Image 1 (cartoon, rainbow, N blue to C red):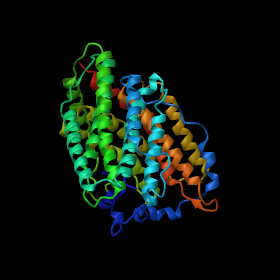
Image 2 (cartoon, rainbow, N blue to C red; image 1 turned 120 degrees about the vertical axis):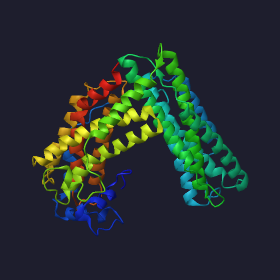
Image 3 (cartoon, rainbow, N blue to C red; image 1 turned 135 degrees about the vertical axis):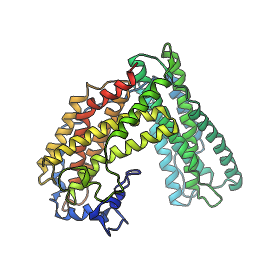
Image 4 (cartoon, rainbow, N blue to C red; image 1 turned 60 degrees about the vertical axis):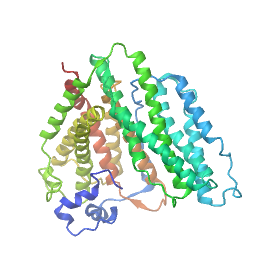
Length: 451
C-alpha cells in the first residue's frame, strides 16, 4: 500500500484528526473510517464506466538500437536457460515452491524474449530495455535449479565475486557520465531524455546490487533472485553501452551540455523551493493546503492523491542535485512542474465545491471520460523525443493502470458492493495532469533551451 517516502502513513503524523489512530494497515487510516458512509456500488455496475479507449501513446526513444543488440540479448537468455528443462519433474525438484519458481521465472524470461523478436525499428529501444528483465528471470530460474545440488560454499563465493565486479562496473558508469550531445533545441531535449533514462536505469541497477543479502542460510529461491539482480545489473550496463555507441554514431556534432543542464537544474530547484507548501510534520498540514474545511474520507483522499506527487518530485529533485545527477534531476524538475500545476487545478475544483465522494456510476464514468478526453487533446501538443513526451506517455500508462484497477474491482463476488472513491479520485488527478502538462512543459523547456 505504500507510495514511496510520502506514503499515506506519513499523513497520520500531521493530521489532528489522526490522533491515536493505529498504523498497522491501510484499513486503520482515518479516512477509511469514513468510507463506511460512502455510496457503494455493485460490481456489475463497473463495466459501463470504462467506455471509450485510452489513446495510444508510445514512450519516445532518444536513440534507435541495432537489431543485432536484440539478437545478442536473446542469445544470452538462451545460454542462461540452457540447463533449465521445459518441464521440471517432481523427481528432480521435490519441493513444489522451488519447482514453481523455476518454471515461473523461465516462462517470464521466454515471454520477454518473444517480445523482442521481429521488433520494428521504432520499438527496438523499448524492446532492448525490456530484455534486462528477461535476462534477470532467466538467471534466477537457472540459478535456483543449479543451486539445489551445487556446492553451497563455492556457489556463494562465485556469486560474491561476481557482485563485486558488477558493483564496480555500475558505480564507474554512474560516476563517469559525460553529458555530451547535439546542441540546439531538438538536440538538448533529446539528450536530456537520454541521460535521464540512463541514470534512472543505472541507479536502479545499483540499488539492486547494494541490497545484496546472501549467506549460507539463503534458500535456493532467494539465491536465484539475488543472481537475477546481478544479471539485471550486467544487462543494464550492456544495454547502455550499446545505446551510447549508437548515440555517438547518429547524433552529429556534439558539445558539452553539462553547463546547460546544470543551469536549468539549478533554476528548477529554485522554482521548486520557492513554492509554498506546508511542512508535513505540522498539525493539520493537509487541511492547510486549501481554503475550505477538509472532511475525513474522500476529501482527504482526493487532496492527498493530488499533492503527494508534488512533495515526492521536489524531494527527488533535491536528491538529484545533491548527488550531481543532472539527467534524473531534469526529469524530476519536469515532474514537479506538472505535479504542482495539477495539484493547483484539483485544489481549485475542491475549493469551488466541485469534488465530492461519487454518488452515482455516471459521475465516475463522466470523470473517467474527461480524463481520456484530456489525454486525447494533449497528445499532439507534447512531442519527442523529449522528457515532456515521456511524461505524457507515462501518464497515459497511469490511466491504463487506473482502468485495470477498476476491472479488478469488477471481479469477485457479484453480490458484494464496493466503494469507488479512490478510483474516482485517481481519474480526477489524471485529468488535471493531462490538462496542465503543456503549461508545465513550457517553462521547463524555457530553462533548458535558454542560451
